[in-house]
Amino acid sequence: MNSWNRRKFMKTTALTGAAIGLATSPLAVFAQGRAINYGGSAWLGHYPVYYAKESGQFGKADLNVGWEFFGTSSGRMSALMSGDVDVAGTGVVSAIALMAQGVNRFYVIGVPDNFGRVEGLFAVEGIDSFEDLKGKTIGTTFASSAHTLVLDLMNQHGLTERDINVINIPAPEIPAAIQSKQIDAAATWTPFFNTVSNLPGVKLIADDTDFSLYKDYGVTPGPDVLVVSKRFADRNPEIVKDFAKVYFAATESLGKEPEAAVPVLSALTQMSEEAQLQTIKDADWYSLEQQQEMIGPDTKFVEGLQKLADMLVEYGQIDKSPQVKDWINSDFIR
Image 1 (cartoon, one colour):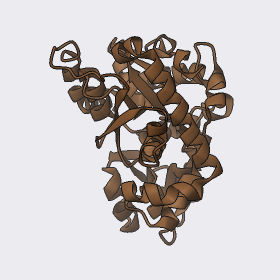
Image 2 (cartoon, rainbow, N blue to C red; image 1 turned 135 degrees about the vertical axis):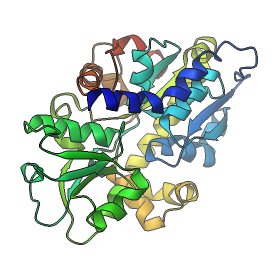
Image 3 (cartoon, one colour; image 1 turned 45 degrees about the vertical axis):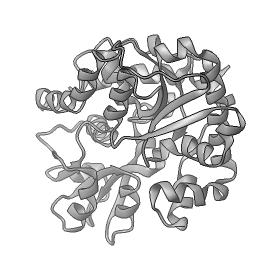
């Protein structure tokens, strides 16, 4: 499995790797003046930027923030490397994959949220514990944080692929697969998590808070991080600092006043207002003050990211473990 998973994972990041050579092209676009271009999607990790942009908070800080939509973290990282965007939100695994390739053209500067309660493993009726999955089939999306959760849970319980059949299913197809009992269990994230949780006879077996690195380090299988082009940040440090101030003011607002963001974010996600409010509430939103404890070369959280990188090697997701702290830069959040 390990070699196959590695090829699968590297395939998902091939587009990113191809873009690396474009980063120094004279056609690469870098922000002028107070302009900064962001790469996002409808995933909850991008809520702070969309909310701050649409509610005029960036404008009040004299920042002209552009928004580019990408369906995958690898796509956003590819655009960051090519200069099409200056800053992006991403699942940290895509960033670690680039680190493992020695790509040092970006910084990790923040952590917006913890979505650990809306990613997890569900099982059909009759399966009440992870041990009950022996001889059964789990469906998940390979090279995702949910996949890493499954591999970690298997390791925690002393089980291997000889004991459990783990198959690759695209996230949007997971609810139908478990509902029709094509699989015995499924690991996925919101909004598919919410859909599966409402299916009759389906039980939550574990979520990201059961991940082996969570208790000691606060690290889930694939936390959201805020990344910025090193070239852009080095040339425009004040713009990045001002962006971060507004960004983390927005995360704080999402945590304290989620109702105010619902009309804005529903336009992005196309969720009902009820579902949108619940999704915001289901995440923990980190403030600028909290970043001081999380982002730095010697913090527990970064130590946890290093252990996550080591784990990805162990599970065959990447070939070697980078020194994650070399990409961490807290200068922009102070």
